[in-house]
Length: 353
Image (cartoon, rainbow, N blue to C red; front, side, top):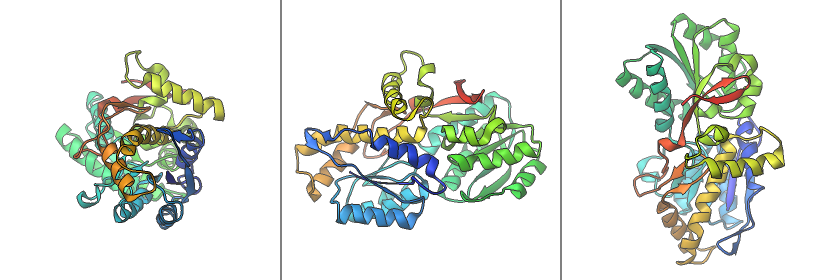
């Protein structure tokens, strides 16, 4: 299994827990030895492509996993389709219809998570919001989902701003947001860069509610944001708050086992949404391998095709962040069981829905 992720660079807070998770995985799958080859792309799409080509041509991988961000994952989509290698993306990509056949997506879709945000806004009586998101496919894709959902809900987007993952200042964007006087602001970023707009708004005295996307679901975001992120509302996978889930929630046991293993290796409260996505990719691969082995031997085009077919037929697989049921028309496979709404209180996540 070849893995390209962002262990350094602006998305390191996503890639590091993913890399740590792969180091915890077993050395056999379906009775066969497995080698996890993990490379760093530093959140650079050209690096992710180089990594993928090396993994396929030199390491002869059967499955490609990655990457940590939407742009780098989309770069891998091209290689996966060209080489007919099944890809498990660790970011919420939406491949073009003609590029979808070989690509499966581990994170919750933007539609699933954005709908939770808009439902919370409706319940809170919010009628006007500002938006600031990454100036890349993640930010653009999330905005399209939010725009459609807010229009149906009777909520107006009164400001629409963008920023880059590597920006060190968003003062101009924050001032434009505040001048529009929104009741709430939705920030769409990931990891530590998601904190920059919020700390800026806080420092400028903004008093409205702040929403974040599920990209902010890691401890580093809270650490960097400090007191400015207190009260933030965001949708996350249930793994982050597995202790707060009702006993009958389907993921409670699997999520708890993963968190216990990860935090035993990396310390208390080191869990991360993104490490969970990596572990879920492992669970999907582990489910698919025995079926693929019935049809072909690893290291062959036939086995890669068999793995693709087996992943597409995964049904009701309980993982850390939801329950996967793939199909020919759904290569994400997660439903509303894959989300909860939390509020950041006292430097921690508290489930509110």
